[in-house]
Length: 390
Length: 248
Image: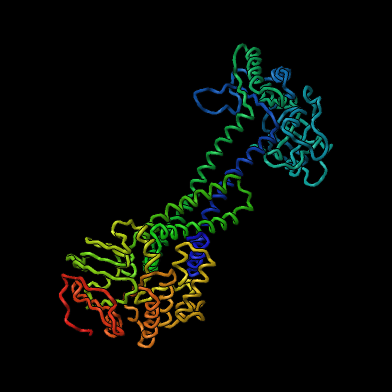
């Protein structure tokens, strides 16, 4: 039997049972679409993560005070180390070859006020380098100057949200605001930008690091961001950082260095696993579609007993009967898959999602059509022609 | 062409075995016109299915064109059946979703013959049964006689040498039944071997050779004389009782 003949034979069956065929197609289409959609979702999350990290700067090392213990637990958020990480440490790290920029950060919460309005905001003390490392830009005014690295200037840069809440639509540049117990001049407003790794830069106040040191009355740094040269070996630099800190901290290696690469790799790993899991879960809907097809095929076999008997009598072999029924299911699967891909494709699924969905669809289709097809092929033509059960 | 030797077949009906065929031996030559008659349950249809290679005997031997069929596997039997044997059923067994043309085309399609060849052959056999005008009709648009003629067209489209008809007129009025018989007998005159199973005495009488079955055995086997000469086959069924003369 020719393939084209089989297609036209199956097509006539589909045309004869339009509603049934339509519903089966829908079931397969939903299954395929859900596999593709959910995997796209996982991939989307991964893409988001990647973008977030690259927004953080291309090659960044983060030095945190406190030692990450090997016995579990994440790196400490706020340094609980016996020895503070200081600005001097930061300056020393900046002299390591391969380090392009050092942005020390002192973090805290202060009240910032202008005329009658005041707000609690997260305040970061840093320098002009911070803007480069975090790839931040001001929408108005200018960023902290290079003098802010070493001088306690009374200036600040506002996040856009803080600016709006304190000044509304009126001009903030050049105005004085009260930060804690000090007065500072607003020299810049950050441009509108989304959240970045949990830090909402819109809701933030940036001041020179020395100013922050005085304001919070603490020399301890929250962390140090290092921008390293693209050509530099990240691992070697990490070793050098630890060595330097050891020598500065009486032999104690009381800092943790996190590289962006390692974080990215970890997240990537987690999300890839998650995506696979999601894909597996969404395959269940395809499995359901497969069972549906099997059920319909079984009904179809018993409805078409006489036809099967006849086909056998006029020269169809068992193999041909099997082929007809399996072909019918696979044709349904192909059409349903095409529909499902049509639904899901505009959402730009990852490259592997479509083939994966197809493999699962055809796998279940084949798996669930073999049994009805075998049953059809095993019919005794004599009894089947009489419409009798065996 | 066909040689059956002590064929036995037993079906399990409920608890008790039913012996559908008992030691049936039969020889049928090429071009014969045979009717098989007998009461219900006498094994007529079983014999027909046996000859048509749809059923396998429990014991005994069956040669089709010197081929010992019981030694063939299912695939080979199917092939032999498709090439050489055409079936006509009481209830036509046409596929409703297919047009007359497509129904007739089915055996050729299953045999994988090319479209062009199929078109010619189907048009040819439809003309032979007088239904050229109805080729595109679906079965529900055709009368009973027309349906059976479509079924005949389907049975002969592969140019079989043996035609097996199981109550071909059973569901038809006498006029359409007559038309169907005319077509079948015309085919027989053209050389096809025709075996009809029927309850209808008049139809049975038209055959040149009459086989009567009772309780799974061949009860009588007689050859009628037509136009003054015998059709040339000797009856050689020793175990069968010599029949009471019913037909001559």
